[in-house]
Image (cartoon, rainbow, N blue to C red; front, side, top):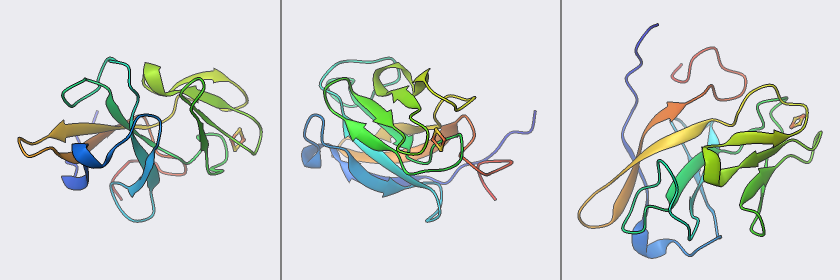
Length: 132
Ligand code: FES
């Protein structure tokens, strides 16, 4: 498979994030909305001092509806046809009509707490590759 070089983009600082309050971002370009969030629970792939900061696309992989966050089970949810994605499990689809997991943005963290998006796992909705 082709290897893609992703931009590095600062999306937030650790000090700005509160548990279960996703912050809107765009990555890898302005047409790709997403969120960065602190889960309050250490997860695989999480960054930061608590290993709990992750970021996802908020375009549903089914037909691109904008997803909303539910703090009670840390899921991203689709108002279109009710697909649900687990933010603690890398965007794993847990219900619904989508046929793919949610695209997750890979993150890196600097010594000053700045969080940067550095890549994407899984395809962003509507794209044949994640960098156009
Ligand atoms: Fe999200 Fe259809 S657009 S389930």
